[in-house]
Image 1 (tube, rainbow over the protein chains, first blue to last red):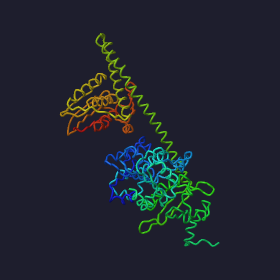
Image 2: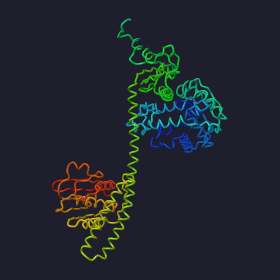
Image 3: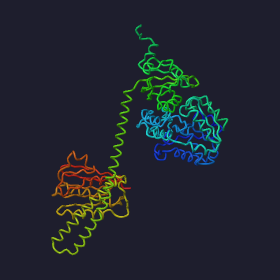
Length: 231
Length: 367
């Protein structure tokens, strides 16, 4: 998100944060019970908002973080005035008429498969990486820190993400919402983006040419342009 | 067919010992080499223009889109990721992949090159390791639960044993007031000694269980009241319970010692009790407590056979018991608890053992 953020940093006061358990967050703060649902992550967003005294702010979230933002907006009315959801999905698993893109079995396979890739995580390195947010030389060497976390936490996070069902929450979002839908995104496909658009009363959807699930990285200019018109 | 030439780069690409795939920035396949086609069983025409993800299993697709693709964009490469492709026959094709992004001067992606190694055996091996780890973790957890239960049981048992012991002690005192014959006095003294020893054992068991349960040894430090009377009392009790043995005590405590007096009493009792059990019965046990050079030093020494080399290392471990006569056999917790008490006081408990004497020394800083 850093590239997108820098495009707005001159006009807006921007706040970036890592969810607990990921990136530069304090791993000691990871509480299995709290983070066993997206609500736990949303509580953190609200806490950050209160700390900074946010009112009428714009929440920009990518993928699962956009759902976390939507939950936070409901928990703290007035904190966020607008919501930008990049590649959102309220539920990844198919359910009756609802198309999420994945079967229960496929998600189970994914959770199992995650163990095959440790993303360069090493128990010896962990304290050095996690404990030194102010030592950029470590960060540079390990630019993939955004995915780097304790494999147990990574697995738990994937489980929460892919097993959550927030369809019922979409209708409760009252603030103006922008949905950015990529082409060719197998994680949050077009029908899912359209479902989100139909479910959120005050929403608009923009279809990006960008492909894949991370337009903020693959096509930041297009994302910035779409957001600028909205905010 | 011509023989392959060593400098034929086309051949080096097509028939390399690894598979190659080139992707366009939109994730679609530009080119693959013959090695991949042989492994996967598709034709080059079938694969060209399709997404790389189309040839992965679903877990691989999600993983590629959510982890590998963004990482490649951020750092330009990613090495050693595991991914499962699917062959034309629908069989899994397990790979270890390195990926490198080609970029223009402005940092825009031009293409991505993947080098893929077949890793079926390696991945099975890793899978087995992960399974073994999970099994070990599960059994460790159940082991931990069992041992916690056991320690809780010990704690409850220790607590419940104190009450009947208190009744016996009170009963012995009442009888002592009315005892007439020497024999009666003797039996009652023995009763009281036994109660005392039993109480000491229960204290140690409780402390041990508490320590294992995470509570550790808690201190109730008090500098105001003097330490010496506590030591006196402990030594007197030991003298009573070990008739015929000599305990020499020497005190030079000139400054207040910031310690838990009952705990230091317990430490002395454990050390002196140990010295009485293991030391030569014709030689005295010497207890010395002094303050000097900013330290509180308490030593308990006895004569007799030195501690065997092999036993030295395990001396302070719980349930370690040396060779003693059965009537003196304890639980093997005394020295362990003493060491824990020393540690709680930010002090040390050390031992030296020679032909001349065996001496335990507790040292703690005076604050």
